[in-house]
Every structure is written in structure tokens, then in C-alpha cells.
Length: 54
Image (cartoon, rainbow, N blue to C red; front, side):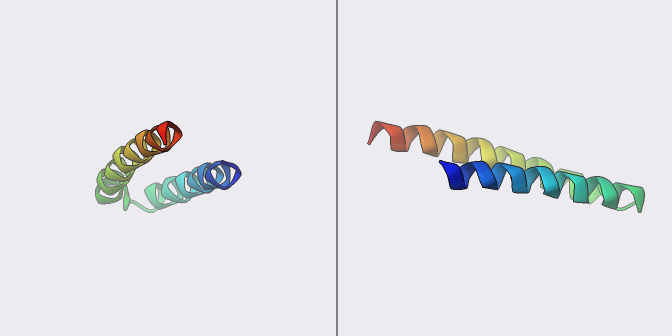
């Protein structure tokens, strides 16, 4: 769980990097990919709940 927490901190830093890219006018395609990544994170969260059952 501690490692998972660090991963979330990493996502926060990654988010700041995406904001930086937006300032350079490269955001649109990146935002679409980033949105898919967030959907993946949601699935990852469900996987953690599934592990709790085991």
C-alpha cells in the first residue's frame, strides 16, 4: 500500500508535467491519452479491491 501511495504522488508530478506541456500548445492529443490513463488507473483501483478479497 505504501508503494501504491508513492505511485499516486508520482501521478501528481506527472500532472504538473502535463500542465507544462499545455503551456507549449501540445495539450490536446496529450489530454486524450491522459484521459485514457486515468481510466486505466480506475481499473487498477478495482484490481486492488479484488486483491483484498483474496
